[in-house]
Image 1 (cartoon, rainbow, N blue to C red):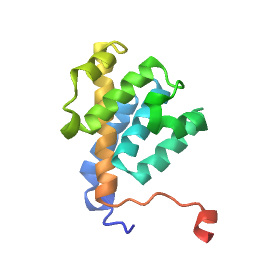
Image 2: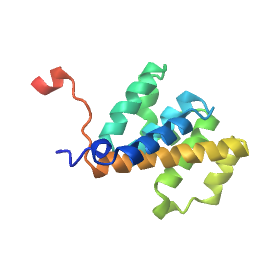
Image 3: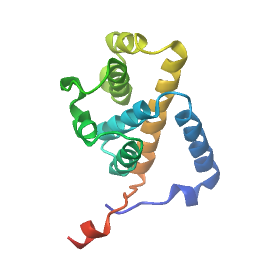
Length: 153
């Protein structure tokens, strides 16, 4: 994949504003482990290799297990995720695939049962942020870092 342009160089002010907004949402008070799962799952759905690379590394640094990262794509079939995580992942998928799902009531009710109203907003904004970054990264063809050993292979 060939990068198209560097949006930070092309439009530094709005990109800085977007980054600052994003960092504010990430620092919203929800569990970091939950937010990383949300970022990974949305990035899986959107096929964003750059964001998957970044957020799986971040999740590992924060203590996430390899098993939970590997099974995230099949979270419905795995007992490794809490009810709160399941609710967040369902809401993540519903909003990431909004044109297909229309944010169904049953998915919203499952999320509502696990989160306060304030947390619902924070979670929703996190989903908006990661989907926005996926679109920037995919649209401009960001390339994730590649380890030297992989380059040599």
